Length: 295
Image (cartoon, rainbow, N blue to C red):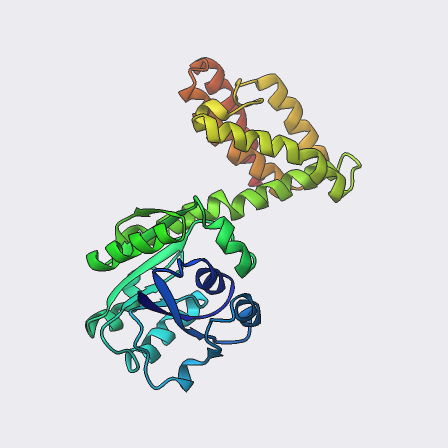
């Protein structure tokens, strides 16, 4: 059985402590940088050690150490950890945007370093047990660390995939676009709908089934095939009506979002074989509309 220490008992750290296969991994230390969620983790399993701080430990001798603090703290934690580790453990952080290079100081003293990022939203530790199942985890780092990370992810019920360390930040930007920007886009759509006289809550309720059906299409089809609506048809007449309505009722920011995404949608429409002439006609209209936003 491999021993595990977790530094940063928040959402992800707490979720890891609860979800790791207890037959293969023993939680040796739960090390907090604050009190966030630590009580939740402690009360879920009486066999867990009490939480402590890194400063209270003279050494950390676990086989595997997770650093699950906020990104800005990882380098400092690694520095503090470097004078306390024994037996050259595997050390992983769980940041999406930072690569394993942030743990270079630990690698230089013989630790095997890497990163494991769960590509799933965990809003509370206890949700991790379920949400890790079938989710993808991005892993990178030293070859030995990547091999260990592969086993850890599978123990969590996840699906590991690996990327080159140099692409870690680009990977994270993609994830933010798919998740955070999706929420921001939905918020923009809700705001547009409220200009029709609906409340925020009603607008969200009305639009939600549409979004769910679109996500289902994406799950079953290519992005190009999943595209529907005005831009999927390169419908210039409807676009002109949209443009007039948006100009009259919403902010320039919302109009710009509509136009920028419209350009991307036309690329998808082209992949689906929509008439090149129709696409070019609509693309020209979009370009003209964008140019007017700059005045």
